[in-house]
Image (cartoon, rainbow, N blue to C red; front, side):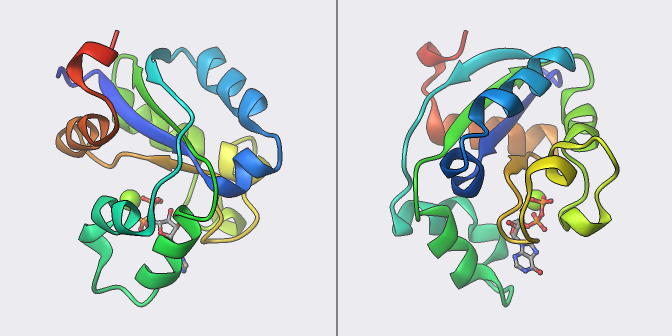
Length: 139
Ligand code: IDP
Ligand code: MG
């Protein structure tokens, strides 16, 4: 995968609140092309695998329970400078610290239920995309 891709998930709180369309619109209007997209639900075990990097953190158990609590929308996205530009579009992890106009500022309800995921590096973008989509599902 090139350095022009990132991976995102619309998280259970935002899907349940009916914000999938509004968030997807913001993503496309910011210049990202949707390479792959689906609606799915993580088991508790799969959520634990996805967030294994955080397993020593105090919020890990709550995070895995939350992320397996309802449907999510994983997507692979393409744009020049995708990883960095997408982190700018979503805003800080804690919505109280997120900049005006960012997806988390607009849609997150707490530091945990913060509406959306964004990969933090090109390497993790590829790993995370491949966690949800086979190569033949990425267009
Ligand atoms: P990021 O999603 O902005 O990259 P990370 O530090 O990678 O933030 O944390 C992964 C996810 O874990 C966050 O998006 C959020 O859902 C949750 N999280 C992070 N920090 C906390 C916390 O202090 N309390 C509760 N949940 C947290
Ligand atoms: Mg992160």
